Image (cartoon, rainbow, N blue to C red; front, side, top):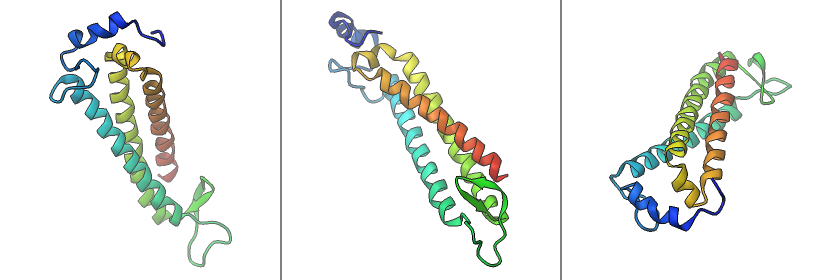
Length: 150
């Protein structure tokens, strides 16, 4: 798609998609709005689960000299070692963050594919693809963390 959409094409979009108004805003209770809110909700869930993992992992991380009675287990993860108990806490949090990020990537990617012409008309397509790619990378990164904590 070109960076500057053809005004004639833009004017036809509300006719092509019943869920668009003349300003290319999504009309509630239409498919495009439902899909938009679905990926936005998935994005919010992703941010929340990422924050939960990070806020939980940081205080549990052990650095040398290790505190008395806390024995680190496994490889270093993001500069920290963790106890067995900490790994048991963090593994499911990393799994949730990975799953949520993958859902976000899938939903946003689907929206991007289905409504590419609308996003291009709003000059948002490139940023939407970037967000989808970042979500997929986040899913991979948290899946690796899940594996490291197991």
